[in-house]
Amino acid sequence: MAWTWRFEKADGTEVPPAVEPEEFTTQGDAESWVGEAWKDLLGGGAEQVTLFEDGSKIYGPMSLRAEGD
Image (cartoon, rainbow, N blue to C red; front, side):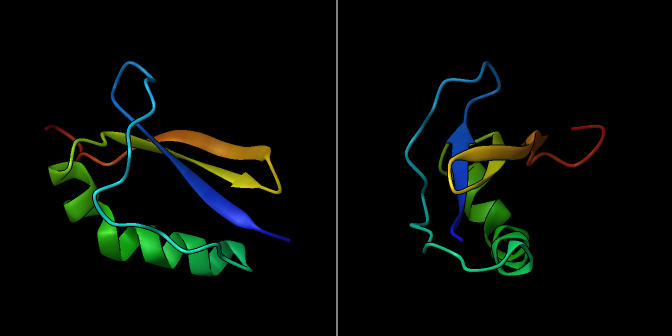
């Protein structure tokens, strides 16, 4: 299984990530990584992310902005 992220602007347009992710072998690893990298991703132009497992959407888009921002 491969877990990957899609990085998007608020309108859903895909953008390249400011921090290049690896291909994750577990959902937990993927979620931990985005939890550590979200500020850099947001600073690089990604406003939301979507998680995929082997090409199938698991959830998202999930905002990288704090509530109220």
